[in-house]
Image (cartoon, rainbow, N blue to C red; front, side, top):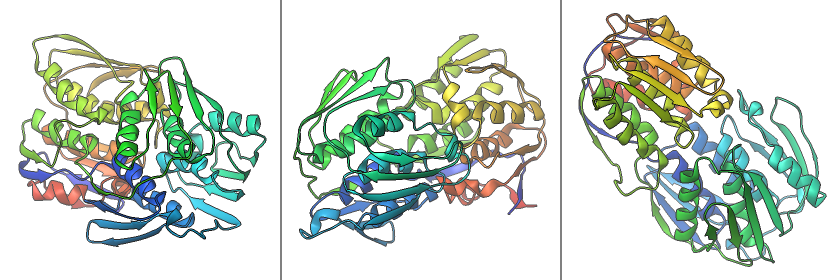
Length: 413
C-alpha cells in the first residue's frame, strides 16, 4: 500500500489501546535473562518488539508465542548454557533494541555484529564507544549506518553517561550490570532527560527481582551477582498510542479509550495534562517536550487546531534523530495542510486555527508521523492522503483497522 486516503469524519466507539511497546521491550529482555520460565501477557507483535524477541533468541532464550502471550525460557535456564561464538543482531529500525542489547551482548566473550535499517544509523552510540575504549573492548563501526562489530566482554566498574543524549544507554546498562561479579555504578552527567523511561526500567527490573539504588537520577548503584527471577508480567496499555485517540477526542470525536493504567510510570501519560492545557483559557502556551518526545508530533497536530492560541514546544532537538526528522516532518506536513507553523533547531511554534484544508502529506516512513496525520484528517475540510502509511507496523500494526472500527473512511490509493 503506497498511499491511503482518509475522508474528514468524526470517530465514535470503544478502543482498547495496544500494549506499551516500552514495557514490552523491557519485560521480554528481563524474562530472557532468567533461569526459568516467564509468561508475558498482552503482547503486540509490532516490528520493534519482534526485533527484541529475535535479539534475545539469538542470545539463547527460548521464546514461543500463542495468541498475545509469550512464554520465555531464559538464557540461564540451562546451567550448561554457552553463548555461540558469533552472534548477529538485526535491530531493524528499533533504537531501543539496539541500545538495550549492545551491553547485554557483552555479558558473553564472543563476536557480535549489529545491523539495522532506515535512519537507525543516525542514532548516536558515542557513550558505548567511550565505554568500549575505556574497557579495551574491540569494535568497529560505520558512520551513519548500523554496521557495528564488537569483540569482547563487559567488566564491572564505574560507568559515565551524558544525561542529554538518551536514557536508553542508562537502561541498557541497568539490564546488564546486576549480572556482573562486582558492584558497578552509573554516573549521569547533567540533567537526565526522559527520566520516566528509566522509571519504567526500574519498575520492570523490580518485578524480576533485580535491585538498583537510584540516587536522584544522578547516580545508580548496582549490586553484583544478582539473578533475574521468572514471573508472569501483564503488559498495560500504551499511552504513546493512546495519545492519538486523546487527540481524536480533542478534535471532536467520541472515543471510549480502554486498557490504560491510571497509575502508570509511563511518561507519555503527559498527554492527559497536555489536553487540559490546550482546553484551558490560556492563549499563550509553552510546553517542555524533553520528557515526552514520542507524543510531540500528535500534540503538534492538536496545537494546530487550537484556534486563537499560540503554542511553543521547546527542548525537542532529539526529535530530529528519530525514525524521521520529526520536527521537519510534522512542520512540513502541517504547512501543506494549511497550518500556521514554524520550527527551529529545537522548537516548534504554532498559531492555532479553526480547521485545515487537507491535501497529500508524506509519512516520512515514520510510524508516529503517519498516525498523526491520520488523526489530523478528522478536522480537515478535504481528504488527507498519506504516503507510505504502512510504516505504522513499527509500533501499531492494526492502527488503520482500529480507525476503521471507529468509523474512519479510509481507502487505498
